Length: 322
Ligand SMILES: NC(=O)c1ccc[n+]([C@@H]2O[C@H](COP(=O)([O-])OP(=O)(O)OC[C@H]3O[C@@H](n4cnc5c(N)ncnc54)[C@H](OP(=O)(O)O)[C@@H]3O)[C@@H](O)[C@H]2O)c1
Image (cartoon, rainbow, N blue to C red; front, side, top):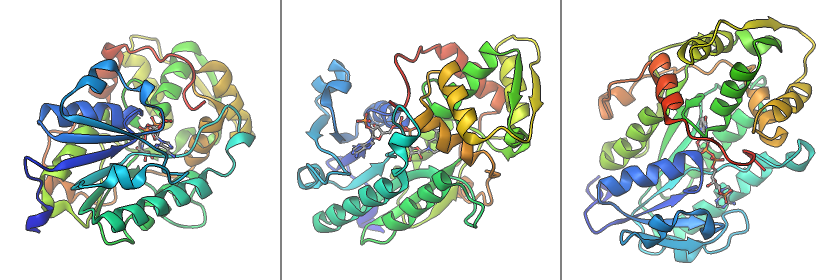
């Protein structure tokens, strides 16, 4: 395991650094003095302070188009894979996201194997394989499988909804709760989930890099609370100081219709809302807790996670997923 331990001169590749998780992770890794390389499709999305940072190198490229990968992987010790292909302004513009995600992961493995990458850390989704699993959660699991199929040691973290300003699922929840005192929801509103605070996710992502014994392992990560989506909405309303919402569930509201409604009411485009809403039919609860032995942290409760996200008060500009 010795060559899996990161040393001061090693450089770490982050793919997805312009996203919700990747953007925050870069700041955490910089605090630890870790040298980084960012593979980005559009460098102008990075802040000027990141572009000027001495610890950061930027490579323009695209996983899906297989562009820039040799330059991105050259002399890299470990990589973070924080990428998905869901999005697009409309549902029809994003029907092939699972195929695209497979292709991107395969391109990653080919480039990683060619470059001799030692470790990859991937953040995917909770949810158990079976014919009822949504396309989105199935696709996240397929990516985990592909990333584990190469020569690189993969660490797979599996999470449900991540609570933090700017996350697509969180923004969907917050806008619906804040704007609609009365809500008509599909029956998935009573599915159970185990949300997690973004700061806990970041602690696990960094902790896994710093602990080489996490290489080659799969970990479920979650917060302290298991609840239904209905309870999560009510708890968010309470954290925000709003009166309880009136939530009526109806059996006939399809994910299609719900996604267009979310697109109308929130900054989340229907192209990303649709796969996320479909995923809400599946229970997403940690099935194992071995991460506690490798990266022990004080887990954040949902009310605290919601309060922190509200305090951050980051306004999302534009549309998420377009
Ligand atoms: N958000 C949650 O609640 C949540 C919950 C559980 C698991 N996760 C997992 O966490 C990971 C990160 O999700 P996120 O919420 O941070 O997503 P996000 O905000 O949508 O960010 C996705 C990132 O992937 C990049 N990307 C997409 N296609 C790419 C390509 N072909 N080549 C290079 N980069 C590409 C995007 O770059 P551009 O800026 O160029 O588009 C962006 O930086 C995903 O694996 C997701 O499944 C998220």
